[in-house]
Every structure is written in structure tokens, then in C-alpha cells.
Image 1 (cartoon, helix red, strand yellow):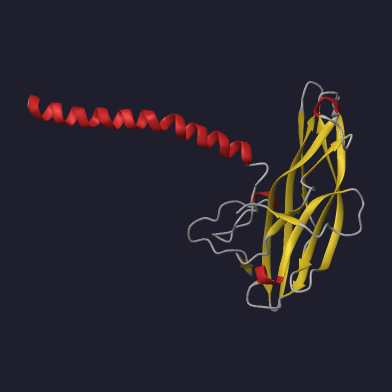
Image 2 (tube, rainbow, N blue to C red):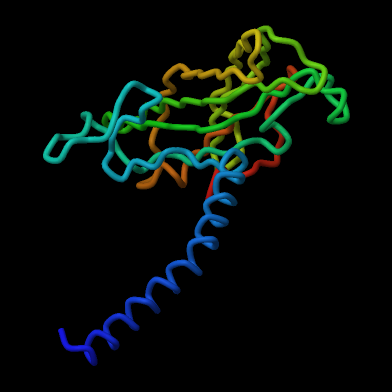
Length: 218
């Protein structure tokens, strides 16, 4: 390479490196924002390959491997009831007086079609975090999983599960996981997402989920 070509090529490479260096802090900032928002807007696992979500003991579908019999990506969406994504003790405590806080994290669902019915499995992961005045121990709460028929806003299934997370001595966080009992429902239209929606959230013992809901992701 002669000196004239070297100057041109090296100048181009230098400009590329400078541009890359300028973008690096922005990319890091974007990643930081994404991680910070993830627990708030975590979406239910989509099933582009019709795989079994890992929370159910499955994994990525291998190339050429057939999906589970009847599995479909047309699964009702998961929503978190407004105000039910987390709960703390005491309920209305300021940050300096909190003993612990339970929060929802990832959600997953799997849908299997059999004739004119669909069976839905829902999995939920969450965590307990110690507050300023908290102590290690096991903390629990009631978590409800419900299915609502969209055409008339009727609950067609609702069950409450007791979840708990243990925080060891010297730790500040513990995790929990719950897999709801399978729910079988009749298919009413070509798209199950238009028929039903899945509601999840912590509850203090109310008989029905709140009428408002917040989407778990975009």
C-alpha cells in the first residue's frame, strides 16, 4: 500500500473508530435504561418457534424439531392488574420504614389446542427484597391468576396461589416461582387472543380482579 492510499484508508478507519467511540456511551446508557425498566414492563414470553417456555421446563426448539402437539403461538395476552404488580409491608410505609417488598417479574404462557378447546398454562416469576428495616426470613403473599372473556368482561377462571420467597442471613433478596394449574377453555373465534386475556396480580383477598389492567409489555 503506497503512502497516499494509506493516508486515505487510515483516515477512514480513524473516523470509523471515532464514531464507534461516540456511540459506545449511548449504547451503554440505552442498555442501562432497558435493564432498569425490565421488571416494570416485562412481557410474557412470546412463542415464535412454538417452544415450551423455560419456566415450564422447556427450552429453545431445535431446528427441525416438531413443536409440542397442538402448540400454538395464538395465546391470550398477559396483563397485570393495576396496582397489583408489587406489595410491600407495611402497605403504606415510606421507603425508610419498609420491611420487605414482593414484586412480579417475568411471566410466561403456553397454549395447546385440542379440537375446539384450548388449554392454557401460566407461569410467573417474582422476588422479595428486604426494606430498610427488614430482617432475613420467608415472606409470602397471595397471587391470583384469572382468565377474562373479552366480549362480556366475565371471569371464566380465577384461582389464588400462595407464593413465598426466602431471604437468607446476609442476603437482601429471594425469588419465587409459581405455575398455575392448566385451564381449558372453549375456542370462540379464529383468534384466541381476541377471545380471552390472562390477568395476574397480588391480592389482599378481594373476590374479583380490579376492572383496570396494565399490559405486560408492548
